[in-house]
Image (cartoon, rainbow, N blue to C red):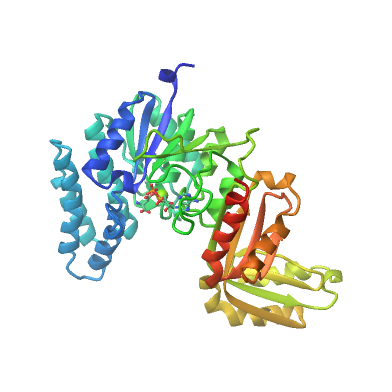
Length: 444
Ligand code: ADP
Ligand code: ASP
Ligand code: MG
């Protein structure tokens, strides 16, 4: 198939659309390839490290409105951000009426989801005018039910029908609407999800996700200096990495494209010549290193339940887990031994329920002891290449112990796709750097 006949969905993140200058780079990228037909935009992000994302300004502004404070000043800052982009692009577009409507809706307390969504909405209006593409309000095609749950199949139908005869369009990311028209957003970073939904609906050949890094990096660049780039990543590896905090792509963005086997290509708006990372269903491409990536999160608590002969007591684990479920706490990880099981939970979700959980466990499990340890971090070392290499856990163990980093837990998933390591929060950065060193620098 020639390039011209392909259909590409392109999503641009906040930093790619933070200013008129960035918009021009985006315009050039889209114009360079006529198959880039459907564009999903984010709200303007940070122009510099100290800057504030428009989405955060909108939340703040709405909070002021809701508390009955004057929100005029914050509103003006937001308006200026958009007007500067319009002026910088020399567009004839005038959004004053839109601002007027939004202002009134803020006064009428239209909800924080509505407020936050206006960043994508207005940026989409500007993008459509700039490119000369049709603008399609996401509220008309991205569907949520009365309770606010996302409706995947209805959305797919609505998008497919709406885009069937539309050659080129801009669709704002991050939000949709409930049956009564009320705007509802995805969780933060959700424009990635919108991009994926559009790609599925039009059966795109590729979903290009344009951001400020040249693809997925082996580790978070804020922790490891100049980490290597990942050329190819599988959907499953991506899930493990993004769930554990590699925040390049929203953790739910994978599901819609996976249904159609559409590859995702993470690209850098500031370096369009770089190939970026390709995320695929499967590949025979052998990774350069044993591991594909490292990611992690801080702020966990481990609850270790000990009882002699636990293993022979039928239903023990189920009863223990039920206590967490009854308290609405989700379980992040659960390594176990013969007479012990440990449950890792998010500290923020756990602290307020701690005593209920402990007494619940005593009641249903009669354990010998329950130990709590807080301020733990979990690190996932992920790679489809680990299956064919023995001694991975040992290698990590010895590297970390050389650095005097105490490992609180190490667990290899049965798929051998990942190894999870628990360390104290304070060793988090150091542990990631060390693992990067043994797997990437030493293998290079
Ligand atoms: P966008 O606004 O384009 O959606 P995000 O800020 O959501 O961009 O995601 C890109 C950022 O993710 C990068 O700037 C980087 O700081 C961060 N990041 C975290 N982990 C990784 C990783 N493993 N590889 C690349 N970037 C990472
Ligand atoms: N603008 C939204 C946010 O900041 C959504 C996104 O960028 O994907 O979370
Ligand atoms: Mg993002």
